[in-house]
Figure 1: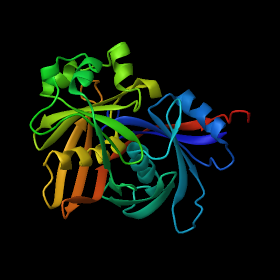
Figure 2: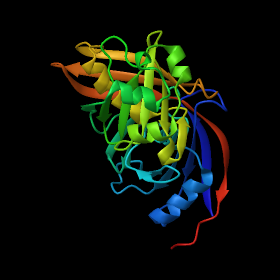
Figure 3: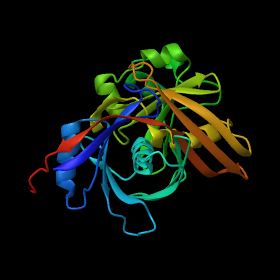
Length: 286
């Protein structure tokens, strides 16, 4: 059997934020066994911790959704780093499929630098976004923000919505949502709030009807924000709130550096709380 721990991530309160399962000592598991365990936990992500390829790094990790492996994700990175740090401040590097991810930990707050800078993709028809989210066309877009694809490893459709009422009303609308997400299965809807943004993320095709906190999407949001003229030269700090509408409020810190009109660094930060631990049976190898 293998030891596991469950953390609520992007929160400092138990039973809020985004749950994460951390499975330790997973060196002898194959991908199919990891997928079986992730499906058993049925959380938005499960992270498997192994010995690092480079002894200078803290661990090698693999991250699984209930239905698929992904190369990088924010909330597993934050939760796993805080677990491995065992309450100590410092720096560590996680070897993820997307690359080396450095994490800094100070006073219970973990911050990672995105391993890949976000890139803007093709624009998305606002009418298609509106239909996919069961909204009226005039509820999509605000200011200079328009729907667009973007990626930094994982790809997302970014759907700016007019106000908090539109965000609360949004939901995947059956066949129209499937049409919207034919190429990229994840939709990140956002709207202004206070000194940052409120967001929701839908990915039912990945086994995630709605995600309480999405660190990778938060990092990738930097590209649409730059395109909309929100990010000036130098460093900008924003707070993103997610999971409010589903009763699991999360707070995600976003720190973006712009140099010469281009993104030069994107950092995401958050806290985590341990809520459970135990042991899990190793599935039979296929």
